[in-house]
Image 1: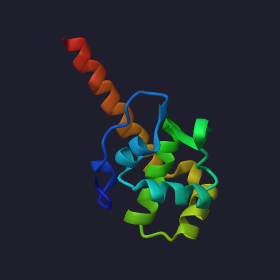
Image 2: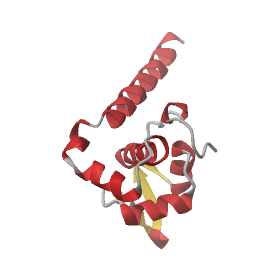
Image 3: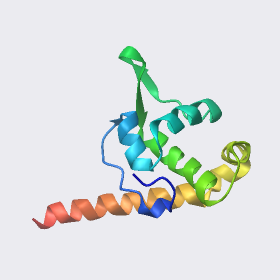
Length: 118
């Protein structure tokens, strides 16, 4: 698992609807206990809770987690600073999330192309 490092090194997000905390941990390079902590600190993170309080994250949650990770680990924000950044005006045109979405779409389109070429 990659704990620090650049978001561009993270694996592509599979095309499924829900992800377990373990899957999100692997996809985002962040340990599960850190994800649970971030849920308390960032109101944007609201995974669906099902039977036995098990968390299920959606694709948007994964993108937000990658954005939080970038703000904290790469851009040097504090938790409070990252929270303000995500809630502030800049969040709407935040480049890191836009770049992640573009990178993700490109990966998915390349996968579709590979399937079509078979």
